Image 1 (cartoon, rainbow, N blue to C red):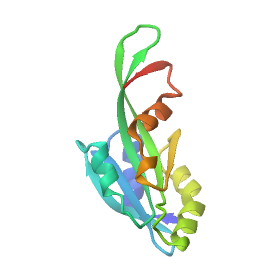
Image 2: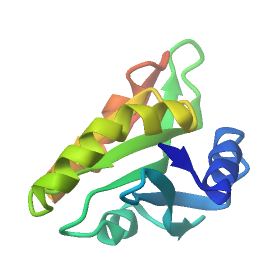
Image 3: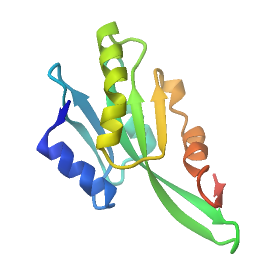
Image 4: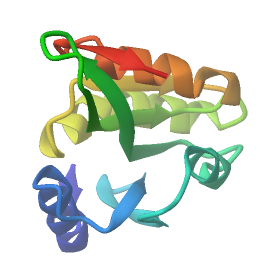
Amino acid sequence: MHFSPECLALFNNMQRGKANHRFVIFTMNDQGCVDISQLGSETAEFDEFVAALPANKARYALYNLQYTAQDTSTRVLVARHKLIFVQWIPNECSGKDKMFYAINAPGVRLAGPSTNTCVQACSMADLDLDAIKQSAARFEAEKLVV
């Protein structure tokens, strides 16, 4: 598996918080090259991200989740953001794609920006924003405000 230069540059920018995109959807060709499929604007909402995922093709994605949490010691509301790795393998995609994307997901995740939240989704119902926020905030010392 290898990554296009644009993909590696975007990984680095997202890790440093310098990317101007709310989400990035990645594709992988038969030779194992990961490349950028679609970029979401900085102001894109979660619904736009979900709508951008193809109904019958597997993809990887990074979503910059922004949420508000309450600091448990000061009770002050603070803005937070976390990168969420999404492994999108819909039920409607081919068996070959399911296997290919499932096998390569750990390598893609390790090569990309560090994320402590991974969402494995095979239907739109698996992409519940509130559940993803709860999962992302579980490592924080703050109380999530939904």
